[in-house]
Image (cartoon, rainbow, N blue to C red; front, side, top):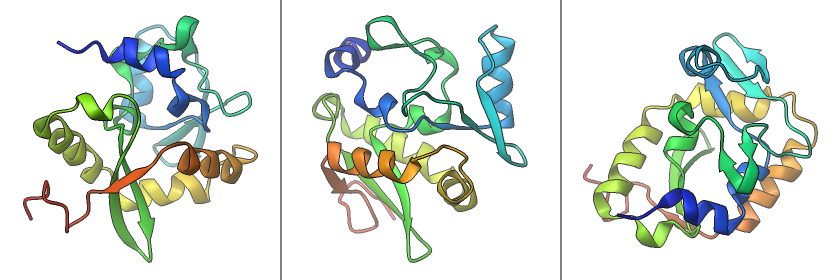
Length: 160
């Protein structure tokens, strides 16, 4: 079995250092009920982002590991499948991070399903209503840090 955490640690958890992530109300409560510190900033009804320092997720701890791994939000669980909006259309890509080459087709499909269940409004608000300073800079870094393989409707993995 592949130890994804070790792969992420070796990579330096690059994805956790480019602006943080967003949580819905249920995901936020799970983190806080588990006793973790509150870094949440409300950006919309039932939509929260994290206060970050220089774009680094506050739950990233020693040796680039995730303090809230068991309670991480959908946006993290679906990584390295990445969803963005272009011309009001959802586009999904597989980001070529170090774990990508270890993923099986069923893993990618499961992550894509998670990504597809995140509303377009939530995705758009993550960018448009963010209170993170320099978010566009972090987003550019994220896009440039990883190569993307389209997983849209033309993708062989997509059954629709």
